[in-house]
Length: 167
Image 1 (cartoon, helix red, strand yellow):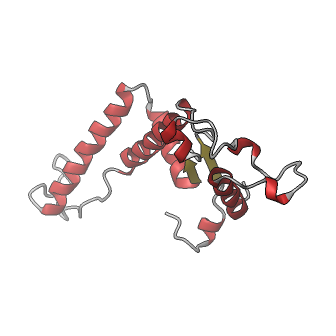
Image 2 (tube, one colour):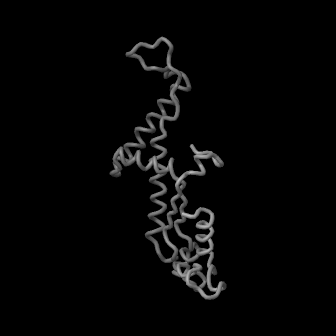
Image 3 (cartoon, rainbow, N blue to C red):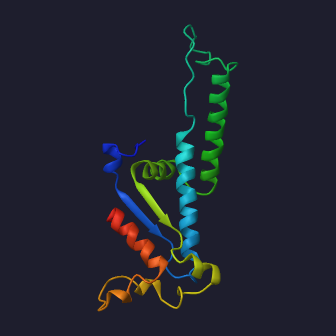
């Protein structure tokens, strides 16, 4: 966990994932959303079970180390079952245990910023441009007049993310 404002938060590497700038591009946004789901699922699976119940002080080696009849013990068993089911679900989709752990590590060691589609209006209308302007050509590179760039919401959004994070 990296609390905002902490030294570890400040030193997290950042990753920016953009699915598409053009509104008529369908595969990229879907891929970014699916990747986000996979990353979160892997992190969730690896986080279970979240707590270890207090051990019995006089437990024998052949007994469970906690009392399953307590709320804490029952919760741990429930979470352990969730972990097994979650990990099996990923395994059924071809995600091996080392891959699952790697995906979970990415989530816990990176600040990941996602924009499935910067041109949401174009996506909704299935149009490449935003108000007739190609967002991919709307950045302040090789432009003679400042009024000729940052005209689209998509370009301004991506520009502000880059300014705030400097990937």
